[in-house]
Length: 307
Image (tube, rainbow, N blue to C red; front, side):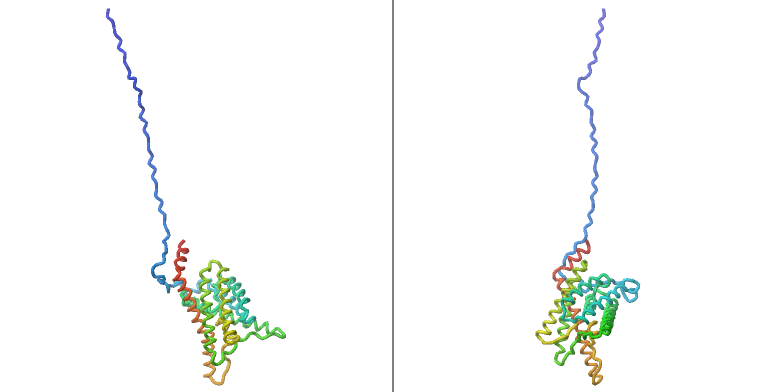
């Protein structure tokens, strides 16, 4: 009998290992490029670019009248100088606190129009320090003279309408031997005015701060001139510190014995109340700029401008 052996198929008892494929996603990290503003550092020479132009290079006699803003600037100088001259003509120069508040109010009112120069001393200093073009400066000075003249006409009109109007404050005639004394008061006072205005420009982002610094500076200058002229030199009404207003005070002589005497008196008055104060304005601006460069303030301002 044949016995048939059944063959058992023995399966492997080893567990099947399932290969788990781990997919690794590559995350591409994009590098963000950070653009850094150039850092302005104070170089070894702080006076590099000291005489650089600070006004629009395209502004000249052919282009300036194409921008309607120049007419607003001219009007601002006319109105501002007229108001300031009215204060000087009616109150006189010996009221420093009233003049200070007047300067602050007027400067805040017209600063957005023209920068509130209101004085040829300031305008000449702005041109010399290359903050203003020559054509704009000439227009400003003409506007200031016009504004002072309008103030003179307006003050005279009110005075003529009054029955018993007091006399306006008058400029004392410069006596013999006092020419250089009075001229130096005007000269030093003009340097101080220009210095305060140039420093106030560093804070022009705030109109009130600008006006407060400039108005306070005017008060300090007037106190200095009053003390020096009245207390030390026994002089009265011998300074004005504004060439445009000085012309309205009739500083130019109207007559004399001969042409040579009249011409000499005119030259003397112009030197005292116009030429030397304007020269002082130039020096005041350069002193302010010189100090700012030494302190590194210009580099700080450049960083703020870039940011």
